[in-house]
Length: 172
Image (tube, rainbow, N blue to C red; front, side):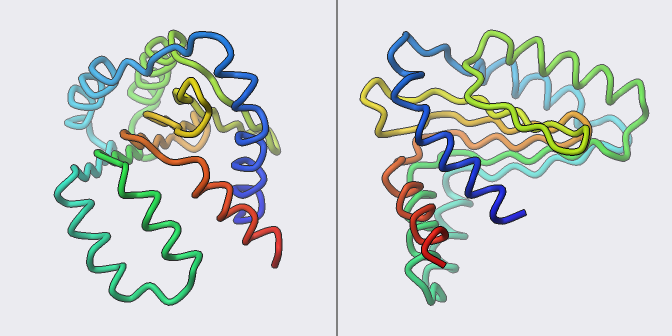
C-alpha cells in the first residue's frame, strides 16, 4: 500500500504542471464541511477533525521523536496544513452512505480532480488546487466511495517536500 501511495504522489507531481496551466477550480470547503456537520450525527458516521492548534501540538510532540529525514520531511509538510478531517462512514446505513456519496460528489464535481486510481473494482479520487506556479497543493480531498472514507487536508502543502519524500521512497 505504501508503494501505491508513493506512486500516486509521484504521478500527481508529474501532472501538476499540466493541470495548473488552466485556471484551477476551488474545493468548496464551506459546502463540504456543512455536509460533514450535517451527517456526523448519523449512526455509523465517525468524524475526526484537527484544527491548526491541535495539528501544531501533535507535530510538536512527534517532531521531538522524529528519527529519520523522512519523518522530518513529513512533519514539515504538515506545517502548511490548517485543518485535517477524516470521515469514516463504513458502518452507516446504506441510505446514509448513498446520500453522503452523492452529496460529496455533487460538491466535488465543481472542483479540480487531480487523479482517479482504480484497483480491484475500488477507486480513490483525489481533488485539490495546485498553485499557478506548481509549487504548492492547496485543499486536498481524498475520497473512496467503496471504502466509505474521506480525508480532507486543508491548507498549503509544498510539493518540493512531497517530491523529496517520493525520491527517498524510490531510493529504498
